[in-house]
Length: 309
Image (cartoon, rainbow, N blue to C red; front, top):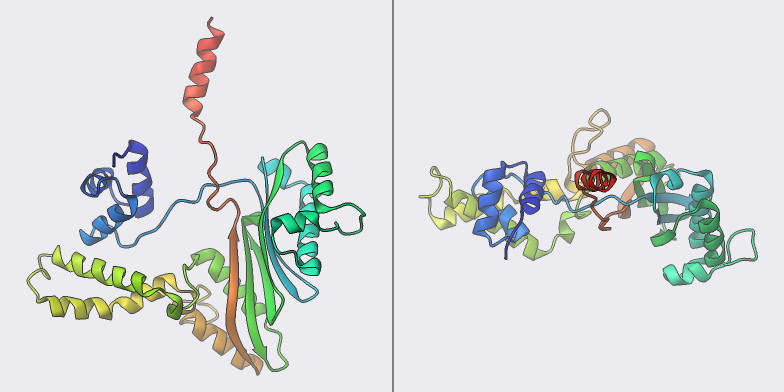
């Protein structure tokens, strides 16, 4: 599989490794991006596989708790300007109310629901909004938590919507705990909530990468395979600590020094109750949406050439 200069640039952004090493990695792996990341790690050039495949799209990722029901929803627009208007934000907030109160099964069902304080459906209201705002708008996704205690948090002006679901025992208010966990999720973007959720295939893959890295280390290469495997197994907790929410170091070290799981237990104990993390939802505005990449220089050159005719 061939690769381009853009692929080399993307790999460099993902790994913070030099261009020539990235080019060598892609050449050695026939252009396979994931294998190239592993290749660089095995050579000791990249410490972690950090994917950079999120291309921005405009709109809002909103999280809210409405009558005890936690809701997270993403609505997209064509421009950031439209997404910041009161009309657009009112639409998103009302759509969250519909999700909380009417519990639609999917986006199509949501569009068929009656809009709050109106005889019109969501689809009809959105058609009116498109006409008034002058941009196309789409409901991309939503989800909700009806059980337990939910805490909503919105970060970076609507770029991140986080909903944390907790099981709370005792007459305590766990809102601050939920807010701090939501901040952790938005800041660190863990791949899994707990190490128990990591597929064995991922664990095996990490072990193989660690062993391969030792094979390429002059100081470690001569050690027996069993020793390398034992060392790799000893490092797996560091792997969990990087990708699993509850095992990560808590970012608010001013409040607690230790893991997120430890913070939750400690904060709940200080309040006189018990809190357990159940689940969470993290929406990143535009995550995975491919936007057309405009070549500005080429566009300007074309305009100049056209003006000269």
